[in-house]
Length: 310
Image 1: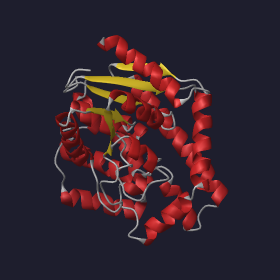
Image 2: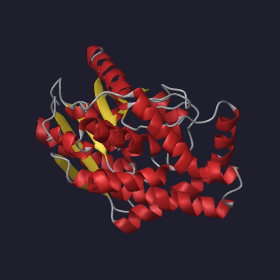
Image 3: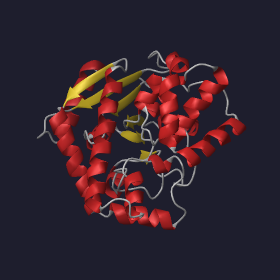
């Protein structure tokens, strides 16, 4: 791998990225840089499937636990802090290994930030007032009329991104999806993208097992503790599962209903990630079988990497 070439291990949620990334990092003498929009938040450990203390002791991890869940952490801050971390890793003679599957963060990191109209505080305040008064689903329906492409990829409860998309449309007269066409796959620096792919049945089964394990580990108590110490900000509050658990703690959902909803939400996110990755230029797919261990997949990727760098 050239001194400036990045290596990204990606794939849908629950595909096994973390285990494979850990194995590869040890073989490559690399340090892991997380590309996950929710692992940045302190205290959100179980529901974001953060690496264990043992894993972090084996390999240094970056861009994890860098913000409080009450903060409005955004992609611009992520790109700035991640680029600084990557530069420091190279400077110390190590290799950065990107691991994660948040499409917006991957795109911004590799191809630069979307440059749309700046924030309009008054317009944004009016939109947020409508969210509080009418609910995000109403604004989502409005977004469907003016920008169906963006609406199709946003959950009706994703108020923060819905507000931003409407703000861009009102300010520029153009849908944000059209302005984002600047992303053509022309990466600002060389990057090798290796993506894990599983059959739908295997991936869904893995998601269901992982969600059940998270609840067994105390996910509800984790959220209860977060709510007792400041709560979740607009961004952290959109994390898959946390929104549903908050409803459970408010008495709106039973525990079985909550677990079922979290499984459905996570599966929907995984399908969207796969659809996005299929259109990401330069992706090299690695097929993973249900009984493949992380080291088996890691060895396969390592052999692929060696074949291109010997």
